[in-house]
Length: 225
Image (cartoon, rainbow, N blue to C red; front, top):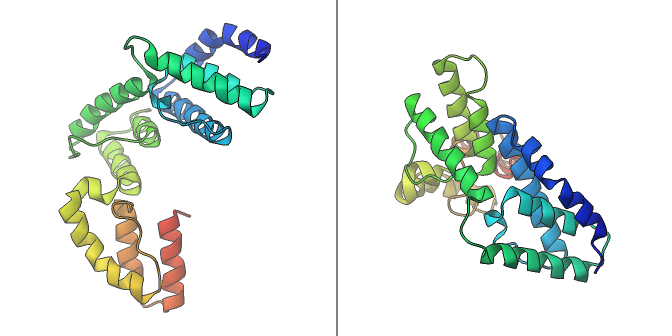
């Protein structure tokens, strides 16, 4: 295998990591999310498991990305990727990219609580949620404005099951199941609907629109388009 170009790229990896993580929390998480998503796609393309990717440091993720984006045959890229991930998992415990995200989430939870928001203590935010909610605290907005923005983001992104628990979500979903059947729609997977989607679907199903219109509107809400 020849990965000479990768060696040259790795020489600058420290500078890349520094520039990626020098900005705001929003920029940090956006960079992390984009890089992780691309790596996941590239690993699937060459037939390599994505297990362990969320435990890689940013430098290791950049190295892995360089391997996967090279012009080498897929078989060579797969072998190199497996070795890189395996070697990284065998290293002593260290602060990982995923742990860095969790640290940001913990700090963010404290800020959101200070605004008067009540969040499940065991809530796990996605990189996108962390990025969007972190951006709420950028600028000179008042606490009330920040709270309103945060509530909107949470409604759009938080699974309703996270907010209300399994039993509470079951009750919410029960009011929708019959409507899905009436319109010939498949019921979404349990826990997949956000607070905002549940509210929108109730409004649609209670409207005076024709069944065809309700079905079209509901499909857009479920698909997120």
